[in-house]
Length: 142
Image 1 (cartoon, rainbow, N blue to C red):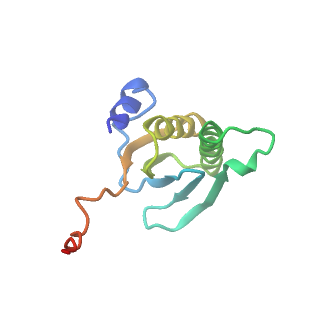
Image 2: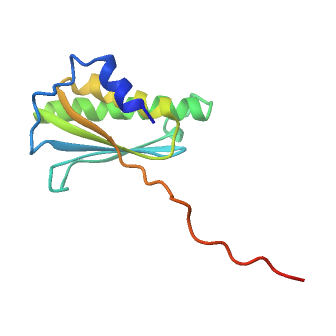
């Protein structure tokens, strides 16, 4: 997954590499199939802006499944970005989690960046990946 590099290279002027704050706040974006959770926490993990949940059922006029959930994810992350800017946050670390498509993750990050406007210190993908799983049971012999 090379979406972090592409997100950084596209608009490197907005991402400040010089402003590496040790005490930067964290933005956790969890992308599921139908839901999106966006939470802003301080470095210790205490919630500053509550876990805003967006699901595709929030917009009853629009129908369309995956496209709709992508739109709702973008709208929610941009809304949280605006709220974070209003709270006076200067720099954040974005942590993205979830087994979803590359495009959905990238667009959620970009829409948060548009709403936030200030510097993003780093972007991390915290999705856990299995390394082969448990051993299968022996095959039954007849």
